[in-house]
Length: 209
Length: 209
DNA sequence: CTGCATCCGCCTCGATACTG
DNA sequence: CAGTATCGAGGCGGATGCAG
Image 1: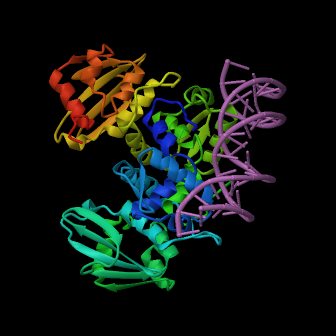
Image 2 (image 1 turned 120 degrees about the vertical axis):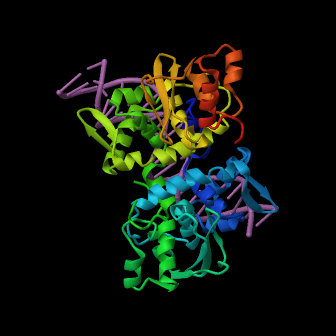
Image 3 (image 1 turned 45 degrees about the vertical axis):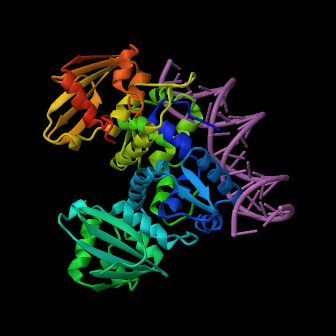
């Protein structure tokens, strides 16, 4: 086990989760518990030996537990959510259009949604939005000054968006608007047009940085 | 240049700054502009060839610029501050006591300070604190609902702490209190005892999570 | 002396094959 | 399905070289 041997919070964090692929494994487990095969399928490019080694290492560090063939984050592991969110936001900000050969999963957009949503941007807002991405359904609920995202439909969505996964992820980049995506036929929006605008506000996509 | 080839904000971020040592270079530059030799001295364990390569790579990505022998972060580079802060907080939370052979720099504690300080924890607070760590002096100012940290003395500090760098960093860990450090003779506090308590509150070190 | 570039041994990574 | 074993390629770490 290689270490930076520096007495510093960042170095300690990178000693634990700074190796290649490790934070991407955490990204998958932040969505929910997963089986080995599912992880492998949603981490295209990662070798099976590395996944096994990383899971073992993360278990030993108390970041992941395995019960009944299901890997899940411990509380300490979920504590990485904020760091993963910060990095995701930073990476999204200058995401280019997808190159060919680039893999994509619908739920990666869900991670982006979680990273970007901040209910404090629209005080007092109470509503839900639904997203149909490829064959999956996600929701964003803003209630009580907090935003929560998850799999599955929203309860009474005031807006429903339908799109493909790459377009969905790309909306997180500043320079690709839902308006453009609609014009290009990659995205449709149903429901209250004003709700769509409020949703964009919650996500910080109104251009007011 | 190796890439995860995943259309996802986190993967894009890790493509840019996920390699070994890269975020530690950013950590140094978040403190302020530095020369090559200073960076090398404050990144013990990093090979000189790797530092040169990382700086070149970061320049090419628009994260770092070099002018007049001084490396500094671009605006995009400074955007990594939030992610570095999140990781630092997570790493600090379970930092053990320093092992022998572990390097430490006084300004790493400054990074920890920046990561932990949140003025919203004590609404309306207006004061400054000064920290003497090894041979360096830092300050934390809470004013107008915002906390700022930096090198150099505070203007009119209500509390002054004197300690060594390892103790200073370690205070960021939950299970090592200033009280304990004082009892062990590693730390002295001058000024208003209540100010010290308010400072701990701002840093989230009061035990109320 | 600073600011790198080059070289080399080693270990990690990535792909494939194999096992329970 | 859930991993383990193997092996070539390449990134990493340390030492050294070299120009300004």
